[in-house]
Structure formats: structure tokens, C-alpha cells
Image 1 (spheres, rainbow, N blue to C red):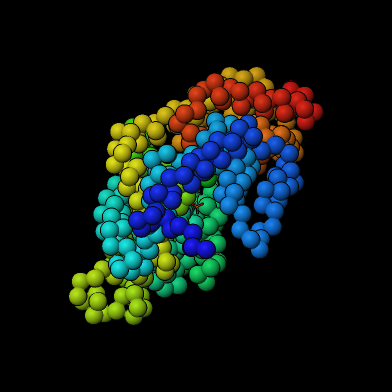
Image 2: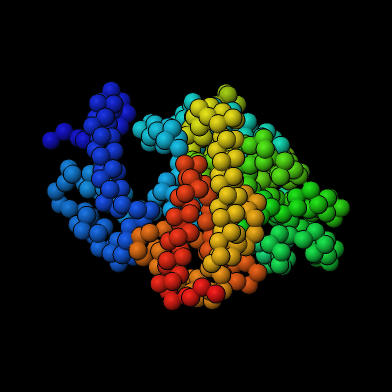
Length: 457
Ligand SMILES: *Cc1c(COP(=O)(O)O)cnc(C)c1O
């Protein structure tokens, strides 16, 4: 019995081609079985389908059809962000060209913990991260697994440059910031109430005046719940006045940098010491595609680290790039390849058009909601998130409507509490969605709302 074929090397392409056909066939069959944005029947039905497809997870003898069977099951049971009615989260439908590039990474398996495991990938990462950092007005950027890791690193760099630093953020900030403060053993964060949805400069000024430093202010450019952008220039001014460090979490809104039209909304971004970016949101990348941009490269010295087998001093002195200080991870996949391919393939024009499209779609959907007699709109969208609810429905009915649509496999929409009320959330990231799809979504919500016994008021 010979060993199974490898993905790379001389046999790689020949072995992979038929397997890719198998994967593509199974994806299509699974999508046909599903027939909608997510599987119907809820968690129990999906778990039973997966249990059935999997059988014994580690059989004594191998089963050659496992690839087909499990990929088909995954597709049949997935929530597919490429379906216009799957619009709950910052869960992006990835571009085909990015997924194709990612396959090359799986095949070659470079690892960015040392140059001898990733000669070209490390050079590519250097070039592309610098370019992306420059877009955000920063000097350099680290590649991360997403906004959560970027926020953690931002707090770590702040702690290392300002020992004892305390986080000050709005109640609208992403939950990962407060968690990162806990992880890093920082003092209890100061959470400034944000009744209007964004960080109010007067309230921040008050906090910065009364709380002893050193302080790290975290502002948000694109809140997860509503896509709102904090007043960045005013916040940057306050940080300068009070000597506080500034982090801007632009995991969602950072994508606006790609659009000439929407970019000015991020004015002030470049004044941050650190910036979280996340191209697996408004960047159409497969997970993971996070970045932490830094204004001052000296801050990165905190991550310097030695492991003799990876970056011995004499290797570094002899000119082998030292990669270990670019992450807290050791083995690290070159997630930059799919991003590099996407940037080059679409260009600024192509990517900017995608951003403009989803933002325009959100405006159109908001107008449809506003004109509908049985719906209430929270507000005109800032980016591509629309919050709405059946007019007059109690919160429990709003929550039940969302779960009914999930259970029936008809639509995936999110939920958010704003102004003390529960709203349904459509996060629009799919540039192929047409206004008619969203009218259909509204009709589904309307029907589900009636089915939940909510008589329109
Ligand atoms: C999504 C999000 C994050 C977390 O990013 P992950 O990629 O999910 O780790 C952080 N901040 C904001 C504002 C986000 O929307």
C-alpha cells in the first residue's frame, strides 16, 4: 500500500485536479439540497444530518468517499453568505479569486515563523502589509486572525509602552476589547455610556479629565451592531490634549478606505497609534484576514522574541529575515496571499465599487423599510447595516421572528439592542444582492411576524 498523494510536489496537480472536481460537485449538490440561505429544521435536524454523513469519525479502515460526503454535508448545512437572504453578521461572501489563492496556500503550506519555511510568502507579506498600512496612514501592519486578535495586540502594545495603562472605551465598542483587557491583566476598563450609539466627545473629555493615566482610548469606526462611526477627529484631539494613547477599531469601517466616495468618513483614522482592520468583513476575504496597523514601528519592539531554531542571532546577522516578532503565533499561514491577489485583481476601482454597491444597497433597503407601513427603521445606515423591526411589536416577538426564519431555513438576519429596544439587523456585504432580494426579505419577516401572532398596529 503506497502513501496517499501529497498536495504539492510533482504528483500534486495530478492528484488535486480530480479531488477539486469532487469538492466542486459536492458543493453544488449540498447547495441544491439546502435550497436556501441556511438548512431548515434548526440545530437538531442539522446535527442529525451531520451525524449521518460522518458516521464513525475515525473508522478502522479509510473511506475514500469521505471528501465528497463531508463536503456535501457541510454545504447542505451551511449558512451561505453568498445567498442574499443570509445577511445577519459581518460574515462576508468571499470572492472566488481570493478562495482560489487560498488553495495555493493550503497546497504549499508555507509557515511565517521563519524565513526558511516561507521565503516568498514572507517577502510578499512585508510588501503588502506596508501598502495596506499606508492606506490607513500608518507605518506598518501585522497580520492577525481578525479583529479580536488585532484588538488584543493593540492593548498589549499599549501596555508595553505605557505600563499600567487603563482602557477607556464606549459602551458601543466591540466586546473583544474589554476581554483583551481582562486577558492582559489590565485595570478594569472604563466604559463610557453611548446612548446615541457613538462615543460622545463631551463624555469622553469628562472621563479623561477625571481618571488617572496612563490611558488608552479605543474608538470604533463601524460598530458591529449598527455600523456607526465614532467622531474620530474630535476623539483624536481629546487624546492629544489629555496625553492618552488612541486605538481605533476599524474592523468593519476600515473597508471604506477602498472607496474614494466613502473614505472621507474615516478622517482622523491616521491619528491613531494603532488601527484594527479586518478584510474578512468589508474586504470579501475568506477567514482569516485581520491586520493591526501601527503608526510607530518602534512600538513593535515589544514583540521581539528569540527562539534559536527560528531566528538565531547569527542567522539574522547573516541576513535571514527575523519573522518571529511579527506575531504572537509561531506556525502561521500566509493569509496575505489571498489579499494580495484580490488587491491586484480588482484594483482600487474594483474594490471601491464593491464598497459603494453595498453601501448604496443599504440606503435603498432602508428607504424600503421606511416606506413600509408595517415596519419601523432605526436610522439611515452609515455603512451597510440596516436596523429595523415590525412596527409596534414587543421585543419578544422580534426575537421570535428571527428564530422562526432561522428554524425554517428562510433567512439569516441578526439582532441588536439599541435605544433599549431589540432590532432586527441586516448587514449587507453581498455585492450581488439586488433591491428585489431585500424586498423579498422584508416580506418574509412580515409573514413570520404575522405567524408569531403579532398583529400590525
Ligand atoms: C468583527 C469585529 C471585531 C472582531 O473581529 P473578528 O475578526 O471577529 O475577530 C472587532 N471589532 C469590531 C468593531 C468588529 O465588528
